[in-house]
Length: 298
Image 1: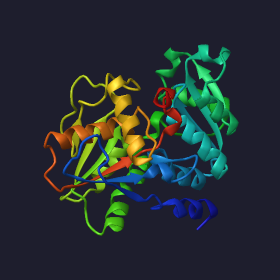
Image 2: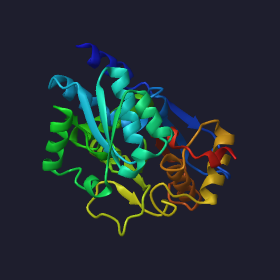
Image 3: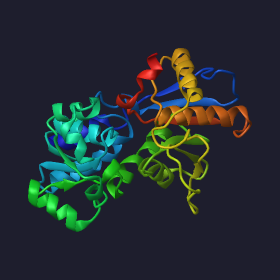
Image 4: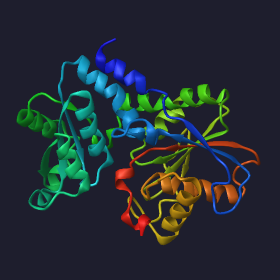
């Protein structure tokens, strides 16, 4: 086993399940555990770590030393890729949506990426729409030489393989299969992996963090669309108040884009009788705390 594989293997399965006693503003009848993937690594945490794991191994096996990927100015994925590059010895290039940002001070996310050694390449919003176009990717390869390309959000087949590892971990830790496993949904890579590896007795619930025109049919997980609070990265005072109360009760930091919305949804479902009494529910804390709003500390 080479050094990269050894380092990656050491992290696998190291996020604990924290059982939350009376975690919500009012009692509910479920047994709720939080899979603390936010603790996997101080820089590369949560579902982004799981999505990157097998991609990093593939890049190394292909002899590629540079990771190139795409994201907006507040992208958790850019943040995680930059951190992974620094930790595991890869060069990184971030293709950032919005060429107007090149002439403005960097926000905290992009400043962190740059501090990790990521080269930030700003493109027009029109060009950014070509991010999955092989011809555009070839242009980028000619500009930055041979790179391992990761898609926006990090979701590909290897990413799903990484997130699929989570359910066997859970079952090993618990000694049984939980009734429900819950996760927030952005690009869908985490929930796809969970659905792929979940046994028949476990229902996977995906809480949409963005507003969709209508639910996607034929999924082997339950798509919950009522808890996006207006759309991706949008929030409401009701959600912020819930997160503050949860943090005060449990001592666990959340963010308002993904995990906070999911936990609000679990609470709402539990208090309205969605779960059978005594059901074991495990929610995945997917990290992303660099995107936590300062309003939560106000």
